[in-house]
Length: 443
Picture 1 (tube, rainbow, N blue to C red):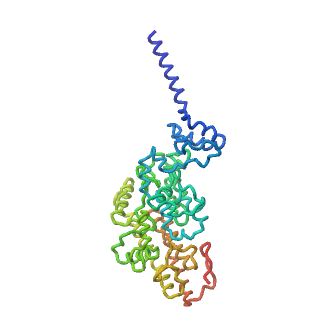
Picture 2 (cartoon, rainbow, N blue to C red; picture 1 turned 30 degrees about the vertical axis):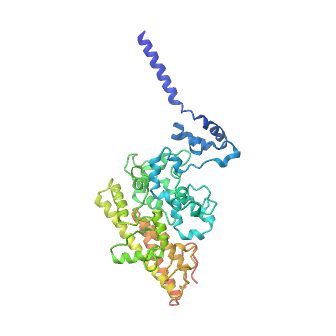
Picture 3 (cartoon, rainbow, N blue to C red; picture 1 turned 180 degrees about the vertical axis):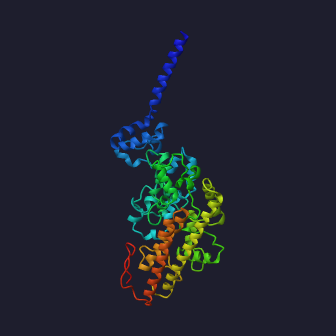
């Protein structure tokens, strides 16, 4: 009798356990109406949410979007699920992100002076700059002005922060998705920021591709973007060299210091006398440039530690030093081109940009560049120089040299030839060779 009772009890408990395991937790009552309505209107949204971990722990529509929207008449009451909403449960990750570059997306865009006179449709539309730089800003149809946000440390930081859903696509919010390098591809692509192409063409990216196609075992040690830039899941994403690949203090090497000074003059971070400008303080407040040796060294040490998981510390250090050396070469070529342009302004051969003091170009203020030679200078900096040093640090010879340094050298030759033509020292070539798309022949 005792055995029969025990066997029956165990059977009932097993059946109950199976039934319980097959049933997902019921959504809270205040989400039921949302689910019922949006299953008819947006079934894919509801499906994604049901696949998420949120649905398993009763984090539903009201938790993220509030309960003020109950019908088609009050859709405007839906709250945007900004990072601070996610911080209710994921405070550590949001705080980490606030210290990193993703939280400064809009502020970084604001350091580009040509944004001020760009067509707003290009700058803040859903298909423009703000697609990546203003993720989280709810009114992209309006002009992006700091006065509407309260400055870099206030609203611009709040609304400009990349939304968590930029990497964990809503409404599934998959952790597995955000761990894949493809999650970075949407923002980190394009001619002037093609970190995705650099990674994909590197040995790291090739190994990842093989692993995803199951040519390598699932536990193969293959670094992704997240391995290097988010070690251990740390959401504080900061690159040592930072925005534009310039930093303070100037190098101890006199030649490199002179070259970088002229690059910074052309960025209006230093005035013609070598003193910081008003833009320098703006850039410093955004954190997009390292302003002390200690800041830079902290990020370098952090990266060496990451690389040493797969490589020797000596190898990692030398590889990063190689990236520094490549950047030095890029700065030398860039500075030479900037000096050619400065002489044209100084001698009145090319009209000096409005608002500039002694003749120095302001590369990031061109929009569009008024002449072909200034267009070449802008492309040399924003596209080819970026590819050169970023490609080197991403271990992509294709970007560092073929698409980067070689294109910088070609641009410098073209700039010198155009300068000679403008001065009347050399006739234009009889047959025009291949030119970059979108550029016109020099007159």
